[in-house]
Amino acid sequence: MTQEDKKILMNDLCARLPYDVTLMNICGEKKVLRTLNYEYGCFEVENENNTGNYESVSILTWKPCLRPMSSMTSEEEKHFLSLKSGLDYDTNTKKTIYNTSQVDWLNEHHFDYRGLIDKGLAIEIKNN
Image (tube, rainbow, N blue to C red; front, side, top):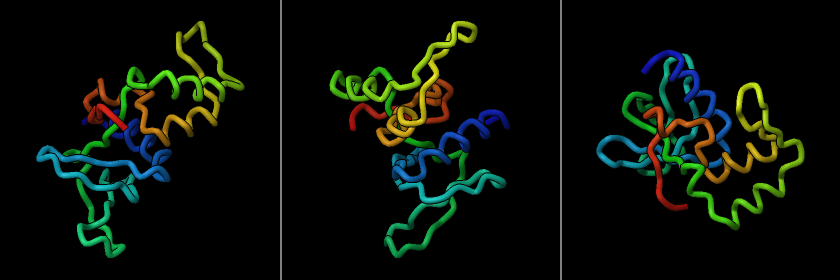
């Protein structure tokens, strides 16, 4: 993982912390993200007995589980677009500019609007 990839992933996950992001490792184990250690590049997750204690897991072996934007249902899309105050399209960069309400909604519903799945930094989930 490059430093740029690490920065993109950590910045994205900081915004998702309030929304109980699920992490998965290569063995299929799942844990809920609780905090990040930006400097050391690790995640803090709840341990199995849910005592409120956390354990550190490596950013290299655990990935967030996110939904691709294409999995948005028509009902979700209607709601998302109803938050469009400030939505714009930058013709120079060819990117959609979301407002904060939309970004919060995308984070809450675990959508991958930064392309982390395509970069191999997140795992695609098929349903809610």
